[in-house]
Image (cartoon, rainbow, N blue to C red; front, side, top):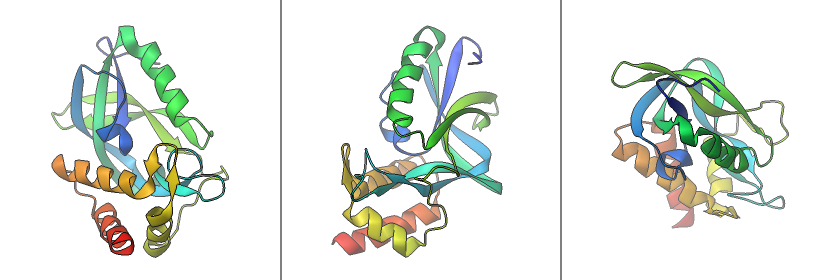
Length: 181
């Protein structure tokens, strides 16, 4: 893993934004080009089960796409422990691929960051679901880390608090709230 200025950078675009689970020296709004945040991964562990999969966010490659999220700088001395933690959390079913991608930080710096992207060939990949299908799944799914709806609501709320607009996610949260009352 490439270290920069004695740091390892990690990109959060979903639950890592509001629950990173690791200490960090710095946190910055970041832009990732060529990828978009998408509910395109069936969750059979954290937000669903094998019998009733939920949906979780993943970075899905798309020409011209942009994803804004949060970059976390981890001290190099803690890098191995943080990466071990992230691998246990994110690579639980091998639907994500660990990769290093270029980010543009809000202050103009450019860094390379560890990011977890969807493997479009994995059986849990489900890109292309309609907003209605996504809402139905998210409204009823629960997994080892809680309800799928709470995952969506927490992510949408934290993005809004950071000033990061994601109209699709906001609209999906409205749909799910209507379904669950």
